[in-house]
Amino acid sequence: MKTTTTKFILFAGLALAMGSAITSCKKGLPIKSNDKVFKVELFKQGLKQQLSAARGYQFIINKNGQWADSAVAGIGGFNRSNVTFPASVNSEVNIASVTKHFTAVAVLKLLPLRKLNIESKIGQWLPASWPKNSTVANLKFKELLTHTSGIRASGTGWGTLKNVVATIPPGTKDGTYANANFALFRAMIPKLVNSSLFNSKEAELSDAEFDIWMGEEYVKQMNLLVFKPAGVTSVCMPTPGRTTNMMLNEAPAPLEGESLGDWTQTSGAGGFYLTTVQMARMMAYLVHSDAVINIDFRDIMDSERIGYNRVFAVSDGIALGHGGLLYAGGGKKTPGLRTLIMKFPNKVELALAINSTDEGAKRDINTIVKTAYNNAWVND
Image (cartoon, rainbow, N blue to C red):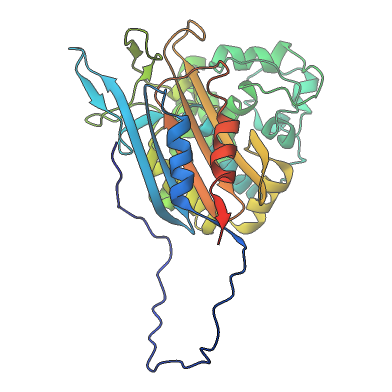
């Protein structure tokens, strides 16, 4: 286990110089309020205790826009010689569906630039060359952003998305979580940014070339709109020379893992690679600064639950976040990983990556986080 003391600070501190002593009546004993206060250390310990069975994990807790504490344990992966490397808050991990939160941020920033809002219809912002069924064309941005479109497709490849738009009318608009809702923004964000460029590329490139261009342009615009304003650079493939956490199976089974490659052409609902430090930094900026997104858009995200799939009551209000889950492809018995970003009512945020996953009763991530958070409030 390792705890780091590095901090990132969003705002300059204000130093207050006290030139003279303040005197006051000192009669009697101080009166305790018995109000409960939040202890970061207790939150950290509660998380560590409940995550002890994971093959490896790393998390950072922010408080008031600063790195307050962190913890790592276990392994982050292993190389071709089966030499393991330790978990680290500085190694990259595919953040999986946490990507959806950042995609939502980009969309909310772009809509007003086109005189649109979340109630506007998506049809004209899909590629013109894609055949469209009328039900999908008339969907609202909000319905994609909140998984209330009725779309059920979990795949995120270009073929799946084109099929959804052309032939699969949405089902009941009941909030069923589906990756295709957000993967469609891989095609729409480039058009929302620059429709003239988008249209010219669509006209001059082959279908395959245009797909590649859209995927690369989505990643480019995500960096310009979301990551760069917070001082972060992210791509949908592992960065050369930077240790990348692998998807690992659960102990006590023999150690197995799988590396993750380039997700550029399947991104939108998932796919970006960030370190836990970068995830925490993004959360600090999104919550405490207008550099990435202003307070009006943050309020829309909160009130409409846009970009969140973790919403639960805690002792002092409502916690909001988004989780990510990946399996190697063979289901719950194969290597996997989990990621999570959360913001709590008391200006606390959590960025978490678990390098293995257990979908059984042992690790209910909502309960783990909620229990650790609530137990971190103690009498003053």
